[in-house]
Length: 277
Image 1 (cartoon, one colour):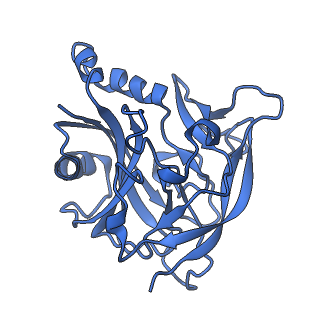
Image 2 (cartoon, helix red, strand yellow):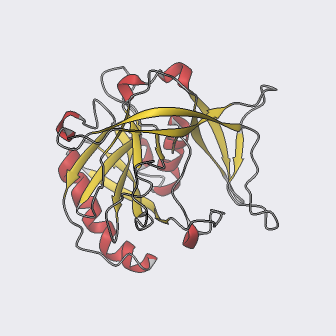
């Protein structure tokens, strides 16, 4: 039986003065807080468990796709090992699932929930994100191609279909604590729900989507995902003619039905540029 649940989701409320929303990535060294000019807008949302019917949800209809394949690399203790061992197998997996011709992984994040600690974007202390968001806007996605590919290759790559896809999986144990929720793109109003937010780094600027509350949003998760399971999350797609899902808002959330003593969530996501012939 599916284990649907209800949880409070932090949506995005734009600045009241109409100014451009921004989020400074690195925290203030004294307060541990990141500077931003917008606020959270919490709403209770129903989250449907897709276990047993996950085949209904694909990258091109819902914007996400679950699968089962254990990783060969299992330690996830240092970046060198992850890049040397986990990146190649992740590229192979994404190619087989999507049919893409070229995959470039441009970064990864390990998240380990540490109750009481602040996520100040220290790579060693990243925690589950408790805010509805999309990692890249279309503008930022094109910028990623320019940033991570040789200039001589960029023009031809941008003439073809390209996507940004995250490969997410639990590590160490099942993600019962603070699971990942995904919003079915078919319930998203692309023009009204999404607001570009400047993502300000020390040396550059990216752009994410903040997501405004919409009661029509259909939220899904897979209860107790194991390290042998994964989900592909579409963050961007150059096809934007209405024929396919473009992206997937997502967030970590606190499931009120989580048993006491459940191990804190640990997960990895790799972010990939995905190109097609």
